[in-house]
Image (cartoon, rainbow, N blue to C red; front, top):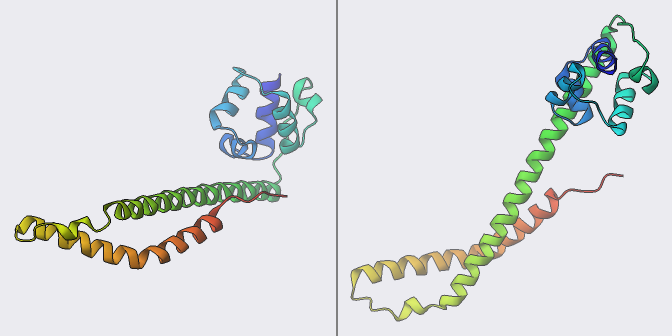
Length: 171
């Protein structure tokens, strides 16, 4: 009975399994299993289903629900709500990706800076008569020169980026 009522309620709202799953923050396969009677939602999910489908929990659990005609305007608004939820999820995932990327870059910059401090210009004492050592020394010195000048700017930029992309608590 519950599985049929979920399916009828979903269809009467003009929602696909994907759209209902997004609203409930579950995967489509979960909704499919409920509708096929292979599993049942827990009590919190029943309440969420009841609110989304606008069907009392008692009717979802026991009473037979008649399939009503879909109100087109309401169906469109439901679909727009689902699209907004999808966009919000993508934006959150993108923000999280950039936040992690900036933290990794920040740590990388600190490690490179520490490595340069540890070698402490020891390449300056190499025998520059050897062409391979001379080329390596010049490359290291050039990298160090550019890195030390750009390090503060990059560090400040990454700190600002980390602060901007962090998750904020919603009221």
